[in-house]
Structure formats: structure tokens, C-alpha cells
Length: 108
Image (tube, rainbow, N blue to C red):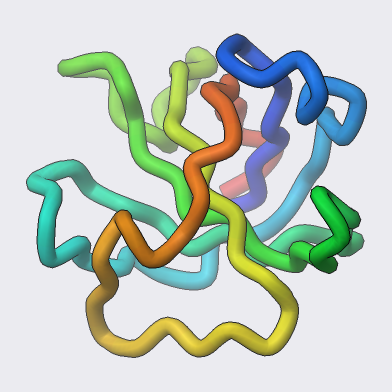
């Protein structure tokens, strides 16, 4: 699934780096959250606070509005630096939550 990620709230400095598009690689379970988290590989990396970011980990913020529905949904955005390895699961505290975004399906 291809998604477009737009800015929603909580970090106006990050707003200028969006929108971005990418492909969902897989669902990645969080050890400390019951939300469904997705690993999204960006089409092009971005630089944020001196780090090169090539992936986001995202999850829907709104109950009953999962990522992947026809209408856009509000999401948490965690950033993943180039070279970071994400195994079978992760802890949300391992990655910086930089903003809230809106995820819209571009194609399935």
C-alpha cells in the first residue's frame, strides 16, 4: 500500500518536511502499545535534526479509523534513521515521535 503523509499537528518545525509518500513494508508490533503500527519506507529520505530519515513508523490515532481506509486518518509519526534495524517487534520509546500526521492511501 502506498501512502501520502501530510502534517497535522504538534511540531511546526517538522511541517516543512511534509508531505511525503512511501510504501508500507509491513506491520510491526510494538511491545508497549496495542495500536497497529506500520513501517513505511519513504520514496526519498529527509533530514531532521541532523539525522537522515528513510522510514516512518506510523499508527492511527483515532479509534475506528485505521490506516488504509478510503478517507485519510490521523496518525502518530515516529522517525527511523537510515541504517536502523527494526526486528520482529519494537518499543515506541526507541524512536522519536515527531508529529501527528494525516495518512492517505495513494494506491493499494
